[in-house]
Image (tube, rainbow over all chains, first blue to last red; front, side, top):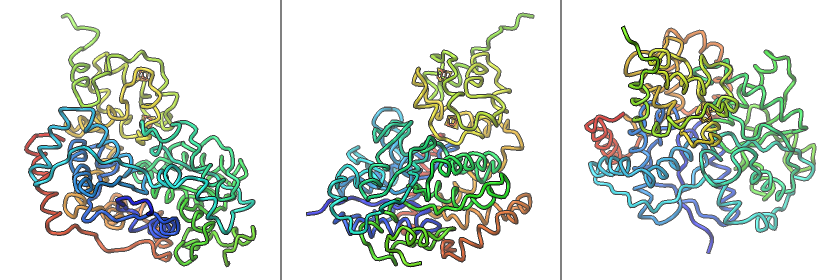
Length: 295
Length: 190
Ligand code: SF4
Ligand code: SF4
């Protein structure tokens, strides 16, 4: 029997990052992992909401945990922000008795109850830690041989206190890429913040942060960047052209979700991977490396 | 007239906010400021904010752009040797500055975004990126920004990544959301 999880997609996954969702589901299927979408889930509130309505954010996030609890499975989300908010809600619920009381009271008003048994995990986690890198390697049919990829973790996957990997120099995504046959590059900004929603409220700041990240990846020899967060993904890819113009760079590489690369290596049908749906089409690069994608 | 050099009241106030408990432990080591990717754009670095809180410089802290320039990356939080929940304190300062109308005009986009986001989530149970952007950039003050960002928007649309549909919860789910948010309001909590 395969592994099974409750799946919490989050809001952006249905929209600008829909290929993250589609490729994730396809890869899970290829690895015999069941992702059952949580019915009637609500938005976790993300950073914008949490920073100005903290208690409210904990309470609405806890609704998802309460809905997931009777299903008896870990909750898995592909978004760093959803992961942070749900994980933090869960952690604080356990650590802070006053908060727990308030959350329980708010949930009770909606006829809900949370006992505290759900474990919140980022989608990368079960692949690496439950399926395992050896098992994944065994299923690789099209190794990503010679492909130099910068694994970009963003800030929130490994912070705060997620216990998943080092908060400063994480390696699990690099290891996963290596198990697919790719060559992860060694670079300094893998867990540096992309500015997240500052791209809306302080565009100048966010663009400088993004420029540093992209330049660092390029200098390390990366031909593509892979991300595991919808916000990081959209920030890196939509700003590239303007950054080239403003900073005189010549950056020109695809930004891919890690599940898209997994899908290629595992031989998932390309129509489920959206390789041509990024700002820069990834297929020519893959074809250049003889990795099967049609351009 | 005697004026104390350090106004303990503000320190006590921030310490009592969620996340603020350990603030008096700050040893001014500067690890937070040194780690912060956005410190260069802040009126005061995180370390300076904690020094100002200790000195009771209430207005200066609440009108600083610092909490609003925080990207919520938690780097300071994991590095602080005194385990101060710095990111949470930044959030608490945002809430205080909104409540007391101390936030500077330049922080308005961040405040408006939070407000619109909250409105969408509370009404529909889910956010919609398209509707969030439309509400944000639809405001007259943001029209130039909208024009500059239009190529990205058009491209997303062309790539089939900009659905206009507003996702909603079931009637029961929406009722639960309302019951939860009403209960929180009743507790008087932000
Ligand atoms: S890292 Fe912690 S102890 Fe050091 S200055 Fe910042 S808040 Fe104070
Ligand atoms: S959480 Fe905020 S204050 Fe702390 S390092 Fe990140 S941006 Fe700076």
